[in-house]
Every structure is written in structure tokens, then in C-alpha cells.
Length: 320
Image (cartoon, rainbow, N blue to C red):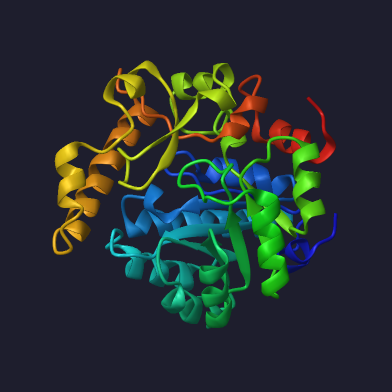
């Protein structure tokens, strides 16, 4: 399964274990590297810069010891992340194989990362932004389609991959809608050079979340995934638990009204992002009736809580 992604990161399989807020951790990425894939962790999963540095050093040591796989970190590069500059500085000093940027201009990240030989992949949901980041020097596009978990795109995978392949020259990595080998092969058949897979890894033995969250990914399916505005103000996919049904999926009316004010809109979104992240953190890390569990429709293929190695095996060889 040789592609430009496998050549770029020296992988055995064209798979990135996607960065998932509160879910991704060093243990998961290590197992992924042992399997010959790449793994990525949101920098925001670490409360302090020193914890982020320690994670980078540990993963760097693992790669040196096993001699395969790759690791990276995800940076939110807009104003909702006041730690972005310090996180970027730490990653450039400690070293990693790649950085995935989300929700903002990657220009500063690309310049700093390339200076220390770190690749930069950029989340995109349409052609316009893809062309912008390619012009800035991005190494690959993470094509976030309408089957992705979390903050998804609005375009189907076949159409989005085709559009980007036609008008861009850097590799396209498809994000969303992959939970089996058949679906991985489908994305490669559309022209993608790799896939970014998140939701199937939520119910992994190594994930640092509650058993209830993992079990929900086993018991619920694609039909149970809904879009909610209550996490970040931007539609985000979650499991339609009784609590989500109770509170609804639209932002409160006052919030919607304030979002129409140009001066207040930025601050309202930042407050919504903070409140939403705290709610998902509580649901992921401790027992609570407020179960706001982020996941995508590819949990339809999750049949049990399994080690990362078994999930990779299913994606690569089609084993169940």
C-alpha cells in the first residue's frame, strides 16, 4: 500500500490515527506506531506546555527504538486557542514528524515547522481553503468530509477528494467514513493517498476515557449520530444520548441572537467553545448523566472494546 503519504512518513500503511480531543494519548499512538501507521494527538489534550513536551519526547524515543511509524500533534491555530504559539514553539524544539492544523490560517505554523523539518498537514473542507494552504506551503491536505466525526465538512468523500485532486498537487488524506478495509480501499480508489481515522479508535483498550463512553460506541450506530451546536457553536457530531435529546442540538436563543452582533460574535463563540469543552471533558473522564460524547458514524463497525492493534488489523486486513 505505497502512496505519497507512506513515503513521506515512512509508514507501512497509509493511515493516520486522527487527533481526538480528550481521547488520543501517547499509549494509543505508540501502539499505532508499532503497527506501522501514524498517530496524532491534539496539543490541547495537555494542560501544560511541559506535559506536551514530555509527550513529544516519549514518542520520539519510541520511534527511535522501534524504527517505524510516525507521530504528530494537532494545533488549533485560531484565536480560540491562546496557547497556540507556545505549543508550536514546544513542538518545534522537541521535534515530531508532522503537525495537523485546524480552524485558522496555518501560515505561521508552516514557516516554523518547515524550519526544523516538520511536515504540516492542514484540515480543509473545501477547495478554496485547500488552494490557500497549498499556496502557503502545506505538505498535505486533510480532506474533512461529511462522514467525519467531530467538526465535519459538508461535502461527500468522493466529490471532495476528486475536487482536491483535480485542482491541487499535494497529497490528499481523506478524513471521515472509514471503519473497515473496504472503506479504506474505497477512499484510495477515489484518489486519496491516505486516510485519517478517528471514531473507530475511541473504543480502544488504550483510550483514557470512561468505559461508558467506549461502550456507547459499541452499542450505538451511524443512525444515532446527530449534529449539535452546543459544544463549540459550530455543528459537531455527537452520539444522540437521552441527555442530548433532552437539551436539544441548537444553541440557546440568546446565544443565537448575540452571534448576530459583529462585535460580540467572537467572544460568544469563545465562551461557547470553553463551556462545550468542559462538558465533553466531564462526560469523557468521569461518570455523569451529562453524556455529550463526540463520535462519527463509523462507530457502526465497532463491535467491542479492542486494543489499537486489533482495530488497525481490521482496517488493514479486513479481519473482524
